[in-house]
Amino acid sequence: MNTNYFWGAEICARKDDFRDFLHGFRRSRPVIIAGLVNRLIIANLLHRPIRTLLSVLAIGVEVTMMLTLVGVSYGTLHGAARRARGVGADILVRPPGASILSFSTAPMTEGLLRYFLKQPHVTMATGTMIQPLGGFDSLTGIDVEGFNRMSGGFTFLRGGPLQRDNDIIVDEYYAREKKLKPGSTIRLINHDWHVAGVYESGKLARICLKLNVIQDLTGNSKKLSQIYLKVDDPARAGEVVADLRSKLPEYSIYTMEEFTSLLTVNSVGLLRNFIGVVIGIAAIVGFIVVFMAMYTAVVERTREVGILKALGASPGYILNILFRETLVLASVGVIVGILMTYGTQWIMEHAVPASLTQETVYWWWPIAAAIAIGGALLGAIFPGMKAVKQDAIQALAYE
Image (cartoon, rainbow, N blue to C red):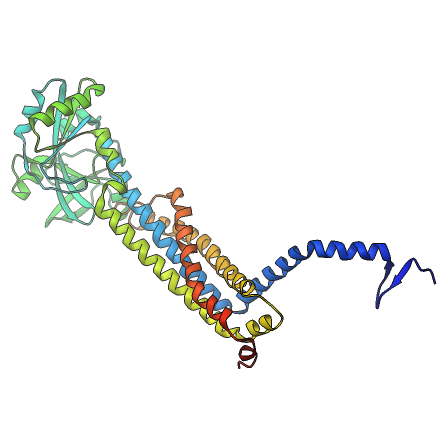
């Protein structure tokens, strides 16, 4: 027999080739073991498909809650800023004590318009009156001639401008949400209004009517909620604002750029706190769901854990498997949550386009993912420690 050959039970190979094979196996063993562990994790998750699906959906809902709330907050504020810029003014004057998002009725007198027109560099002044309707809706009264001169007027998609005293005009989103068209009748503040036209969004408000009509109807004759000013040179707006603030320190006076820059989540304390509370609740829900799923998985696999420990598996090895399962669940849940966010965005766009506007805030994706995955891993710690502390003999005897 040729001594250069080595015979195994079922294979025959050269000694050198066999040694090379063993050497290669030792080097690739970590990769092979990692692959086996990954397949084991996937098999474990697929073994209980209903539980896995529910866990993924729960984490997905957690992510959707966070991204939807953030998207609506940013969308609403950016929409308000866009409509404010659409007026074409350089300066905004608000009544004393008014917050950024407050809908004050009419605490300012129309006499202020004449006062502002006498100020240096102020070329135009017009006022509006806002009557809240509930939620984010409001009626906005405008001086049609003054507003058109300052803003360039509305761009009508259907119908035309205000003519009669019971006319209102609405933007395209409000018309879509309420299913309105020129000639429609809508009842607001116990009054029937005739829709005269539907205009392109981005100008001042969702619903507009004549200023004197809303003033008389609400008992606020000659009163205004906001005043818009235009100056001869936009570069002088900051200078004019500083002068007006020194003369009228009790009023809230902003350049339009300054006002729109304040329409952010961080500038609105109540909204910022609300987002924090909802995100906290969502994180707790995700933590509880993963805790229950992993705890059940550990109890169901008591014998499997016993076998692994009897074969010499270390606590770190067992924790590694459980944490990897949790990471897979959370990662898939994050992806599902992001996809569901597009669903909520579509629903709002078609169901309530005038009430809620949701933006896709991409930089919040990693934040939401970190919160969801972090909460999920925290939820897996106690079940993991329970699995590690199990006695191998008792686990093998578990029924």
